[in-house]
Image (cartoon, rainbow, N blue to C red; front, top):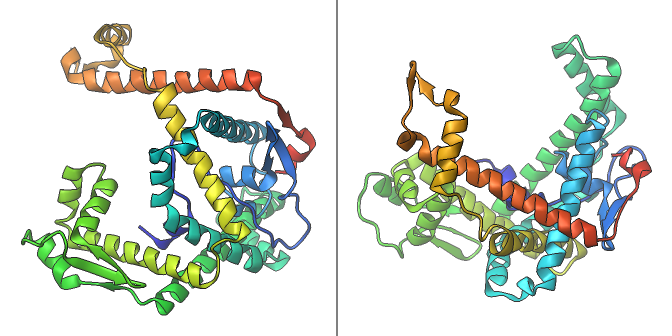
Length: 359
């Protein structure tokens, strides 16, 4: 796992967190408001970010208009969900405070990166021309205009990677990191190590074996999978290095005075919105969603042709878990869509088509 993950906000089921930055070689529409939901605005940079252009740094003329509209609809939906969650007091719960608190380090890191990118990112016409030349050399079917539209994005992403790398280097220099490779080796061999044993340090903070097991469980999707990964010394060392580097980056962000800035405030607002949307979904939208054995049997019968292997019908018992998961996901999707549709009926939503065309 590379360092780039430090500069992306925590992923959530229903949301993509967006942010804006400046620094292109010519005036751009990224700060223009493209839509609003009950007075809460969405800027061009937010929409570009949700379409894969980090920071909304450059326009995306090669992205079809229908994809831009779909992405905008998702951003509007997330705002409506978060607003509804606040109206129900879900922002005043221990669960909300806990999740936001757990991501405090990420808020500092993301905020500093945004500030650095805003001041340092510059994409010149020479940068675009150089990238376009490479693209056309690798694909003769690209027109010059097609190559240039892609080139601006590639040039911006290349410069953003450099900004990230510089931040990591500066943080690790300011706050040296340490991972105890000897203990990592013992754990990988299955030797006993106590939970309070310190495996890594940075910026005055310690990472114990207990902390590491929790991280492994998250990466592996469960405690058992985490135990399996702990037997891989390389994976364990990378995970620890990533964790202590994150600590160093947060310490560096604090030293750079990012706390209390508008950058930090904006990142925290994005985080809170995503947390609220997910809490609302779990507590109210998806809470009663279930799949019965009768529904599973009906789906099995309806799609019987799909459950054949080597000319023989696969028994229902064999594919029952997969059918249950498929039906559950489908029901959850429909439940969320129906809930959002009701919110839209009550909401005041505006979309500026002329600005949407600039995305």
